[in-house]
Length: 584
Image (cartoon, rainbow, N blue to C red; front, side, top):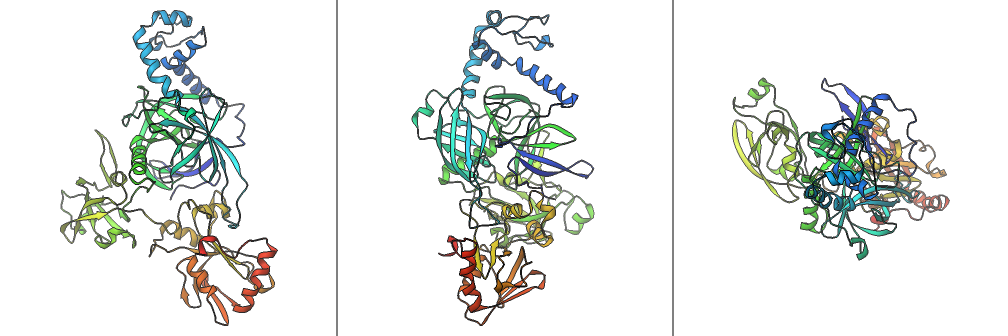
């Protein structure tokens, strides 16, 4: 099952599957601060308190924080771990002043720490965004605007990185530097929906004065220390939490409804941390905080977008002067772990790979690949029977990682086994187009109204608007089946539905039709919403016949229905019978 998507900005749900295959419901949280945060628990459980105290002790022993504390004057500290004191307390764990600490600490390491860490902290900014989301249920109007707070950080080229969901449907974006009382207007340069990254800039030169951009580091190893910096809920000043890299694998990106490389860390990150950097022990950025897992059986599970994904986003923007996305190979595949299956497919004992189940008809690879082909390697890298490829020493990762390293329009060499014969093809990679898209970016939803029937297209935001955050359980089964399994037959195909019926005398008896797919009009198939609007507008037959799913049919007299449309629009204060994109 795909991860459950939550409509609320603060919470997203995800199905977490344990090692035995048992599925448990979990909540994946976007880490941007909500306008009305819930108050913290007044009586947290003792285990959680113990962990928080432990983290505070580790943070208080951090050399970078010691430097910050020395700025404010004399600071007293107590350490329960003498061998981790970092020269801020004596071997007996007794309290010493900051001045004494400075005297006992070698000068060179102290200044080196200041140079590396402090500029990185100053490069972290707070992002203030005003959002105005489209109203997918009433597509001719917008929802009430709301505000959110999140984090970001300055990189080279007078640019700022943050999360895509932090500035989604933005009306205004402002940035505030650490220790400043001024908010600067920002411009959104690019939004990467799949990777949940956004690129901003500020035209005011004053914003860039005295700030050094963050430098990126290499992909960290397991157990490497990470420090997450941002502006989470609970205060207005900058916050620092620390932990280690717990896991590295292909993760489900909730906002983008896609799967890319991700890091799991155990640092405490909360709402408002979205877009904040994660630093290694050398002060270099190794990722961007973007979501966390909330579950009764899990604590302190946060996720970070790693530098390979960040680098792909930035290079994609610099190469094309816009964000083009992460390419995919348009297939569904099956593991080949069963020996009888491998033997039936004609595989030798030394051969490994995955079997192609289905191919997207609109994908370029559909011209050369066929169902039941066995993919042996991708770009020279052999694929195992479970679909993984070598990653680093002692690690393996899903072969989709190799595809995500490519750019739109790139070619890849694919080796397959077909009828016991090995073949090689150069496949051109492109963006995957879903029948029910995860997002519609940069434009309001499309709609068309005739005789009170509101026609629109189905998308994930539309399902979330109609059925709430649990839409994967509450939406009609046929729509969910198309959402999970349907493939587009042409590049312009859309799933058109009757969203609702605005009651009038002309549509008596049809009032209960809601969210039902339109299959055909007057005997002609409906490919997309614009096709339907053109057929209705140009209809000269005496009757209009709409063939719906579940073998329903709607019949209206053409002349009477078109005449009634204007009165219905006036009654409901709808400015036009169709959206602007259908008028061209």
